Image 1 (cartoon, rainbow, N blue to C red):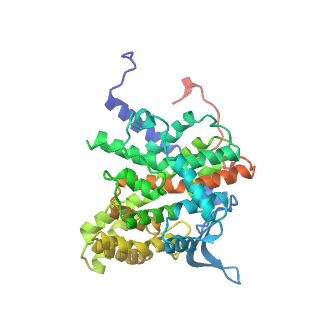
Image 2: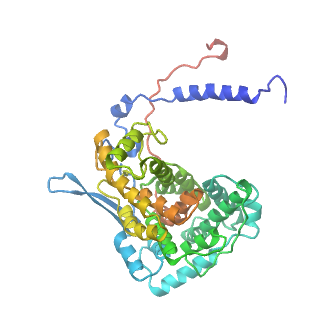
Image 3: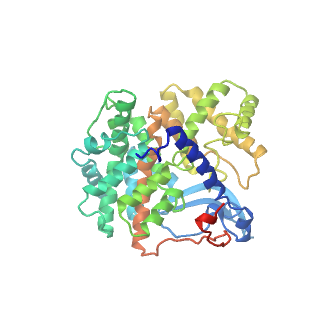
Length: 458
């Protein structure tokens, strides 16, 4: 490089910091404009209600009822997959002592619960697709290990485009084929990515098990992850339950909306799924349960065995940005839609105690229950909120993953393994309805000005 243009690493950092400050200052929009133009920040109105931007038949979320006066009254949360209450779906497969994720995926994709024959055939299709192209692990995953498994998933999904003989065909038949393959492949990409990470960065033994096409998605995750491939029936069933509850959550959640937005452009399935993975990676979305687990580890150090008052005082410190990560957030509490309760959290809570007992962690379970009770009280006292606050699914899902011995690096990828069922259904829905490309309006608020010649700029 020409010495005249060469900068040291320190000089580069200083320059970047200067430019970053300038970039940030140049993009601050005066809050008055949001009110002036009635702009719904985050596509939500002043009451936190989402702005209607689309229609879907995939799932429905109920968080309020409308009384005879037209007033919105908060109610216990309800979640429906294709019109069927999630509580009933869970009761159905739990009572019959079978796995539910594959049945749920079928329901989301095709709109009806499968018959015994249809479910058997569907499981065979997923089992046959549960493999990766020859040498893919060696040539793609092992070639450049990553410390972030969501990065592994995005890179791998985009690379699979090159292994598809017909990647750009967006006919429903071809898209369904691609989606079913990705639903089957994501567990492999996630776990293999983690095993390679452990080998290269933690000097662990590299263990690559082959999947079992006859087993469920949950069983295969545990089989691929554990060196001995062993797991208890309760472990597999609870992981399966988590997959079912994370599989879908309305078209308005950030990653599913991303699926609709990107699919509306007519792009390929691999690009659409990769974009949704990028959305899910964010700590405000799929990464939230990781934050919950880290927060609870901190709370455990300070509050295990403490009184309710001492625990509330510490929660106040978290809200006041004086404890934990100083973000002012109690993770796992509150939801963009639900107010009185998150039905998914209620279902998980009813099962988690059994696993906590099996693992000898009842004291920790009791701490979770205490925080679930005290946190809403503290938030209600210290924050001005427009609706109720309750535990969301992330509060208990991270705890279950801990009880299962799953590495924290796989928490968000497991969310993706589940949610791709919903993304696939939303992609097919978007393509089937021949909608227009999604392009919301943005109001420009910068004043128009004249161009100034370089020699005259100050």
